[in-house]
Image (cartoon, rainbow, N blue to C red; front, side, top):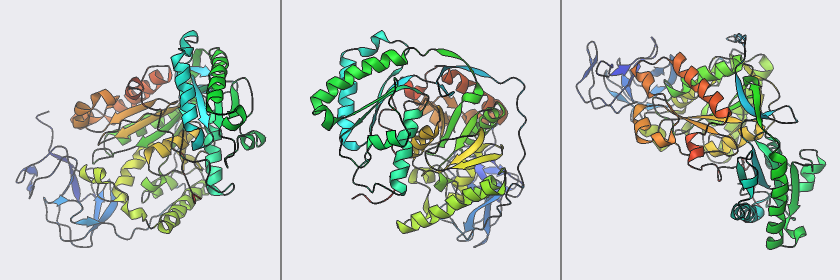
Length: 505
């Protein structure tokens, strides 16, 4: 739009503005304020002189300190902005305000499971206990495809081999083992699977009988398992696997879509390839949708612990009690130790793409990321892949690496994913549909075949309220069977990435 301002100041206390488009040098962007150099779209401009060591503020929050003097109208980025010491006031529960529930919860058409949960898709999964079974799992899926096995079972959405890179060469106890154990068990119980065939090699550390004995999974009409060694090798396992898939497909085909309230939706929220617009368009718009889902009785999950670093106080202040807030801080402290042990540092998170998009420090990135969580109380904090056992807005621990984080959310019970992006992301996460939300109009134009929602029009005046309702309405349609762009293009078969913690031996 021709009357669009050049830049936006997000809060009265901010000493920077955000460029809403690329701005040449010498342009007056506010009364008596001209750019002293060219400013890329989404990047920061000093709206007052900032001395060395002074705090730089965005969203009314500190995002770092000036590493050198910054004049009014100058580009503020890696050349003059860095991390400083940051100590947060956690204020446990001080800003917690309950959201009013809606009088009449929205509905979607879902697959009702005997567990009481509701799926948004009806897939058959071929789950592997170890990487050594990965190729055989794919051979089984390919054999079923050659036979056109699903032609007789129209209610089944597809067959998904779930292959990963671990399951052996690891300790049979401790954090790494338990994390993978929870992940495999969680996928086995996810309501978007109508049936599961689990395939192992036979001699791996992650033994299928252990999953059965600990009641994480159980042999039933919808869950079957076998090992390659017991079956007599690859060919015998593939033949047996295809035969079992036919039996499982007949079982899964009994499921049909029926009305369910939005309280049965469990939304995994992600951001990947974020830019300078993400925190003012896509993320807060998703936050509005998240709050709507909470008001309708559903669950929204925020994750990526390393990418809320420096903004955790905004969540602890909304915690329902001190214990919940303390659990989040315990995760932050674990991550500080974990990264230090692996010669990393939490302060050095923004990727090259983030920086090209205008994000400079982890504080700035995190402040934008937590906007996905809206304003709802923080009702719970969970381990990676731990089953979510309450409604509302919750946090699940995970790395910031998108496929790894989503894998944990799906294992925790997510049946829908909403994924904001500023640079562009093209991933999908079978068996769970992923809604891609573009933060800026340029991304929407360039990658529209991959994007489901354009939040770039917020820069043209569309309200966050209206965009959040648009996202929520799309969530209901996708939950009822409408395909997302990533589903239409066939994404999701290789994005199962369990968090691998500990030594590989």
